[in-house]
Amino acid sequence: MKRKAQFVGRTHFREGNRTYTSMEYSYKGHTYFVEDHGWHSASDEALWMQHKREQDRIDKLIELKDKEPVELVDTNNDPVTDCLDKLFDYWNGNEQAFD
Image 1 (spheres, rainbow, N blue to C red):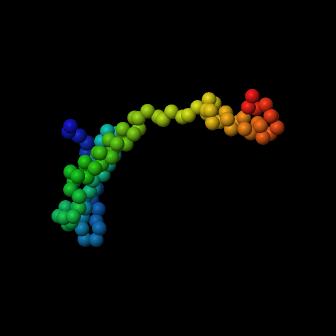
Image 2: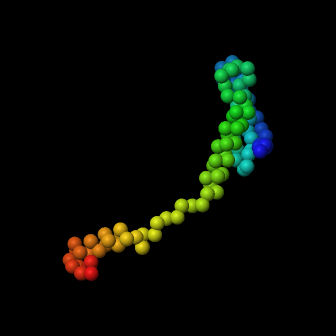
Image 3: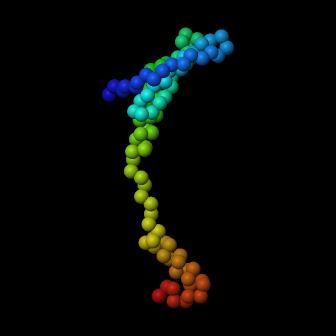
């Protein structure tokens, strides 16, 4: 499946005597940035790898957002809570709590 991000804009910035380019993209309603360091550093992550990492992150974020919310436990019908209530009633002088 081919992914399609829309180019938003670019910013050039200097760090010492080097100039870098930061590019902004929009993907599925989210914004992300990739940086082009040009030939200055061969150890930097390639642009396509930055795109892939950011788009994977956005896909996971959307997937988590779309998941069904976890159903909370109903403590009104919880046998442990009922037992503890009866125990506390017994300790408070209600000797018929366990009848």
